[in-house]
Structures are given as structure tokens and as C-alpha cells.
Length: 132
Image (cartoon, rainbow, N blue to C red; front, side, top):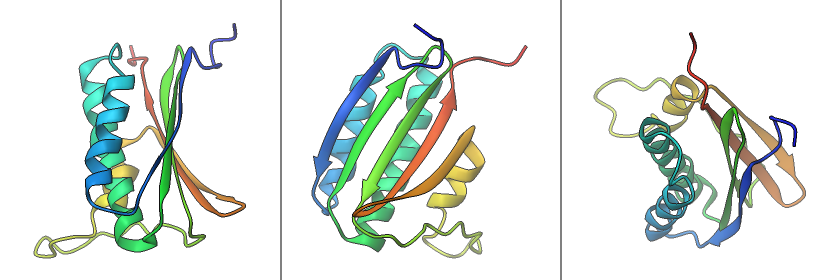
């Protein structure tokens, strides 16, 4: 098997557009990532919480979560039902919200968004290979 092919995959899980779905999605992902380094698992949990919170606040649609683990990285994908692209903000420290996509852009090793037939896909990758 090629090193960039998934060692294992988390089948898509569908969640409703309610706040409890953020916790459920985070738990599903962290359980799937049981054997990756703890720091990567914690960062993935933080970032999936931010992305799914954005879905609930801005898209207001159901969403799906899936993930892959390869020899090199973890890739997480969240698909929602709106084509509106996420916006990376840099809010004033006094602002109570608006940091989710900024955190994603700062923490993830790679991330992006892609249109899909019924909305968009937001994905991020976290490396499992530490630089020497």
C-alpha cells in the first residue's frame, strides 16, 4: 500500500444542525484517532469543534464528518449544505467570536475548501511526521 493511501478511514457520519452535534462529532473523531499521538488527537478535536461550530452558526445545515489516517497525516473533512466559503477573520481581542477559521489556518498543516454538489467541503490535515 502506498504511504499516502489511507491506513484506515472513518466512514461519513451525519449530524444535525444543533450545538450537541459539535460534541458528538468531536467524540467520534477522537475515538477514531485512538492510536495517533495525543497532541495530534487534541489538535484534531479542537479544529473539528471549530469547523462544526461554524457549520451550525453560519450554514445552519446538517453536516457530515469523515477522516483518514495515512502513514504521514490525519485528514479530516466536514461537508455542509451551503456553498458559502468560510472566511478567515482576525478579530479584535475584545470580540467574543470569529476565531475558528483563523485557528484552523494557524494550526493545521494544510487546509482548504471545495465545492460539492449540495454544498461545500472544508478539510484539514495534521502531520504525523515530526520535522527533524
